[in-house]
Image 1: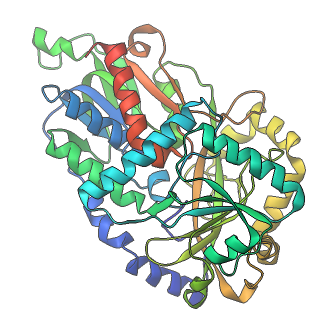
Image 2 (image 1 turned 135 degrees about the vertical axis):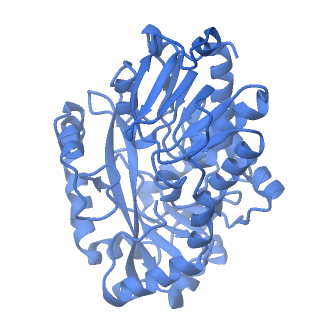
Length: 457
């Protein structure tokens, strides 16, 4: 999560800002600005959301159906501003996910497609690998089970390695045993997203920025005053009064997927509850401590993965993230607050059931968010040499976590539509959790298949 700075002070802020400028984030920001003044007001399919999933889906659709008219509606002035531009940049291999699940299938397939796409487009990436490290004896059975799961999912090159082999790969890392995933990599996903947009526009698609969808309804008369105009019966309105007329809609709205579903008259479940993840950053002179990704063994008692070490394309190393309730859906700073978002989250029974089931974990995350020493203590389990003097507060991101009314995290991808005039013309991507960035091209192919089936393109 995160390419923008959320919390840093004094010299730390100045250093981190310079680091971001040098790392390529600013170079792609200008390319993210897209024309929003196209005269075209009718579309065969409108894709809502200019992030990785929305852009990849729009790209897949226009390449399959070059004779149709497609558009992407993005509420920001630039593309990939939120989850797609606020993530760790890891190309996941597909180890963690339940065999047979969409997550497992799409991640393994998506990783292969991601590497192939980057090679074709000249987008730089690093095949730096990942170690999932057991630091306690009771973690070893879970690590072995994870190995079996990864093999069932078809993950390439997986193997269990010893403590000595851990140090050969990561000289400063300590562990009893590790799962070595050599085909895990890193990339700048915002650069990938902008490349998808470039492909989409080159194939004839149009990107409408500064178009925040506020309403949808069926039109009762032709926008052009002709029978031909009635081919586009759905009116999509922006918060600034702009209108797009279309035949069908694909909603890839991320943090706002539940609200877009309600606007369209479809179900409000699952609900999105935002969780902020704050990263720390190793000071440049300490980056030698980490070569590749270093992850903990997941604990099934807890809802989130835990802190890990993530190298970045610019040479920096991120540490974290934690996971705390965000008081704003796009609240990347500790003090960001939205009354509506806060009420939406705290009034939802599913959140309180989640909190009750994970109270001690939640309290621990809040404590570590406030006190760096507590986070450093967790990091030292893997790399003892890391001290509080070696780190800075770094970027943050917000995860669009889907919850059901029983307080269960929705672990897999959720796609649905609805009933009625508009509900039958819309496909909602309700939940596209990590590894959605890795899986974006595979997800796009699946969405394109579903759009063809539902809408008979």
